[in-house]
Image 1 (cartoon, rainbow, N blue to C red):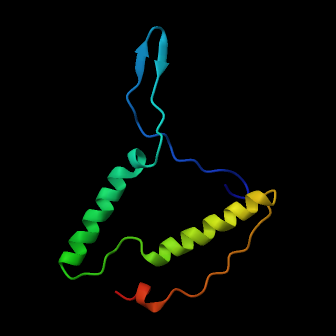
Image 2: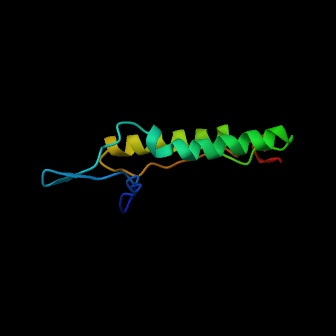
Image 3: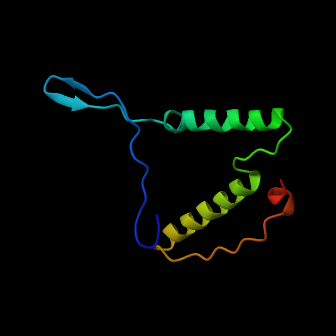
Length: 99
Protein backbone atom coordinates (compact mmCIF):
# COMPACT_ATOMS: atom_id res chain seq x y z
CA UNK A 1 0.00 0.00 0.00
CA UNK A 2 1.58 3.23 -1.11
CA UNK A 3 0.66 6.83 -1.77
CA UNK A 4 -0.17 6.18 -5.41
CA UNK A 5 -1.09 2.53 -5.55
CA UNK A 6 -0.75 -0.99 -4.20
CA UNK A 7 1.89 -3.62 -4.90
CA UNK A 8 0.95 -7.28 -4.82
CA UNK A 9 3.14 -10.36 -5.12
CA UNK A 10 2.15 -12.63 -7.99
CA UNK A 11 0.31 -15.81 -7.15
CA UNK A 12 2.57 -18.80 -6.58
CA UNK A 13 2.34 -21.18 -9.56
CA UNK A 14 0.00 -24.01 -8.66
CA UNK A 15 -1.59 -27.02 -10.21
CA UNK A 16 -4.97 -26.17 -11.70
CA UNK A 17 -7.79 -28.70 -11.67
CA UNK A 18 -10.39 -29.00 -14.43
CA UNK A 19 -13.27 -31.16 -13.33
CA UNK A 20 -17.02 -31.10 -13.93
CA UNK A 21 -16.79 -28.03 -16.20
CA UNK A 22 -14.91 -26.06 -13.54
CA UNK A 23 -11.35 -24.75 -13.36
CA UNK A 24 -9.94 -24.33 -9.86
CA UNK A 25 -6.73 -23.87 -7.88
CA UNK A 26 -6.07 -24.14 -4.17
CA UNK A 27 -5.79 -20.97 -2.08
CA UNK A 28 -2.70 -20.78 0.12
CA UNK A 29 -3.71 -20.64 3.78
CA UNK A 30 -0.38 -19.42 5.18
CA UNK A 31 2.95 -17.92 4.12
CA UNK A 32 5.01 -21.13 4.21
CA UNK A 33 4.27 -22.41 0.71
CA UNK A 34 4.96 -19.01 -0.84
CA UNK A 35 8.30 -18.36 0.89
CA UNK A 36 9.65 -21.83 1.73
CA UNK A 37 12.26 -21.94 -1.03
CA UNK A 38 13.39 -18.35 -0.34
CA UNK A 39 13.92 -19.15 3.35
CA UNK A 40 15.81 -22.30 2.40
CA UNK A 41 18.15 -20.39 0.06
CA UNK A 42 18.71 -17.68 2.67
CA UNK A 43 19.41 -20.23 5.42
CA UNK A 44 21.89 -22.17 3.25
CA UNK A 45 23.71 -18.95 2.37
CA UNK A 46 23.90 -18.01 6.07
CA UNK A 47 25.33 -21.43 7.04
CA UNK A 48 27.79 -21.30 4.13
CA UNK A 49 29.15 -17.90 5.19
CA UNK A 50 29.30 -18.62 8.92
CA UNK A 51 30.98 -22.01 8.38
CA UNK A 52 33.73 -20.20 6.44
CA UNK A 53 34.06 -17.52 9.15
CA UNK A 54 32.55 -14.89 6.85
CA UNK A 55 29.89 -12.32 7.70
CA UNK A 56 26.43 -13.35 6.47
CA UNK A 57 25.24 -11.35 3.46
CA UNK A 58 21.50 -11.67 4.00
CA UNK A 59 19.16 -9.45 5.96
CA UNK A 60 20.12 -8.47 9.49
CA UNK A 61 18.18 -7.75 12.67
CA UNK A 62 18.48 -4.08 11.68
CA UNK A 63 16.70 -4.82 8.39
CA UNK A 64 13.97 -6.54 10.41
CA UNK A 65 13.69 -3.49 12.68
CA UNK A 66 13.35 -1.16 9.68
CA UNK A 67 10.69 -3.45 8.16
CA UNK A 68 8.75 -3.59 11.45
CA UNK A 69 8.77 0.20 11.91
CA UNK A 70 7.71 0.66 8.29
CA UNK A 71 4.87 -1.86 8.66
CA UNK A 72 3.69 -0.14 11.86
CA UNK A 73 3.64 3.21 10.05
CA UNK A 74 1.62 1.63 7.22
CA UNK A 75 -0.97 0.41 9.73
CA UNK A 76 -1.18 3.87 11.32
CA UNK A 77 -1.68 5.34 7.86
CA UNK A 78 -4.52 2.90 7.15
CA UNK A 79 -6.18 3.84 10.45
CA UNK A 80 -5.91 7.52 9.50
CA UNK A 81 -7.51 7.28 6.05
CA UNK A 82 -4.20 6.99 4.22
CA UNK A 83 -2.53 9.95 5.92
CA UNK A 84 1.18 10.00 5.08
CA UNK A 85 3.40 8.92 7.98
CA UNK A 86 6.94 10.23 8.23
CA UNK A 87 9.64 7.69 9.00
CA UNK A 88 12.70 8.94 10.86
CA UNK A 89 15.25 6.18 11.39
CA UNK A 90 18.36 6.50 13.51
CA UNK A 91 21.70 5.93 11.83
CA UNK A 92 22.46 2.25 11.20
CA UNK A 93 24.68 0.94 14.03
CA UNK A 94 28.23 0.35 12.79
CA UNK A 95 28.26 -3.35 13.66
CA UNK A 96 25.60 -3.89 10.98
CA UNK A 97 27.66 -2.14 8.30
CA UNK A 98 31.13 -3.50 9.06
CA UNK A 99 32.14 -6.62 7.15
